[in-house]
Image 1 (cartoon, rainbow, N blue to C red):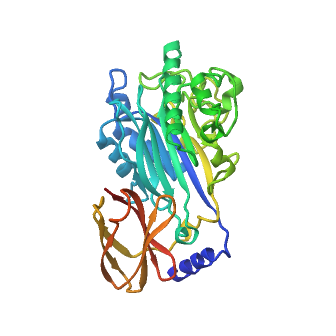
Image 2: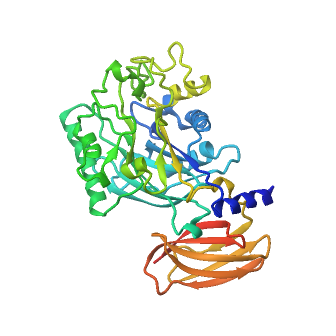
Image 3: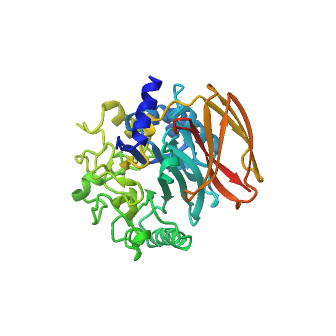
Length: 426
């Protein structure tokens, strides 16, 4: 079987095969997950009770990127989701981002990702009024990086804007998105970007939303994939796009009123819409999971709702007062093929960050020739070295290179990437 996989990858790299890869992105407000308040206590919102519900939802959607709002600030909870929800039953498919909370809020954002498809690079706060809006950077784990001198970068901006329908709340939302866009412009951050989260906006004319979709420079402007402008709040004309609330009646923690607001969004950059940088939004893939369009001002499980299986519908109702939103992205043939990459049999150890010299140990199942490569984050090959053997110790100097992040890749003698990770030189 391994020989067949390697043959498929070799054919792909030679350009005979032009398969694409598909990425599923999911955003979800977890409703005070692991956060105890006076109105939302453990008696009605205990994380242990929520774990099997969230696992059911994750198993159904199977996202490659999963971003969240309303996660408690205690890091134990973040790891618990990874271990007991994402990687439950010995599945080790997912990893998580770093923890960012410069504001000190009791509710934070987080990103989980499929580590077979993505390498996580970094996270940074791009504004911290009310709560942090966090920029997470990843790149696609392409086996063709050494041939194409490029990979596909994907940047996820996750924000939870100020709630409320008062003028002061709207002003805070406006300030938060204005700060975030200004940060992107100041740092020349453009390319494959998504801006996702619980925006708490009531209509498309609200300035916080317009800051994102109406910015003058198209390189920093975001696009609403379903393009449904209007007054979303309590308006049956937008029943099919509402994401809040799953409950007709409040239980003290979950808001009541039934589905009547569009609070949750995944916006995309122009580069993602046009596919300018190897990743393209898949048309008509955006949806609010569990919304069948027939439950305006109702609980999502009232009467008949066959948009998802019954166990998933129950999990969505019990877990949160928001629905998850999802979309799909296609990775083009220049960098796709991760599903066909050979199973690697390498053990790779090195200290990270490094001061100037990368001391690397490689234990290989076979002693074949391998190539160690160091790449810049802009796709330039910096160092290439051929090694051979079952047990390899190498010292690679980066003393003449600037401090920062680099990409380490190890390929076998057939050119198939067996290992890819990041190096930080400081």
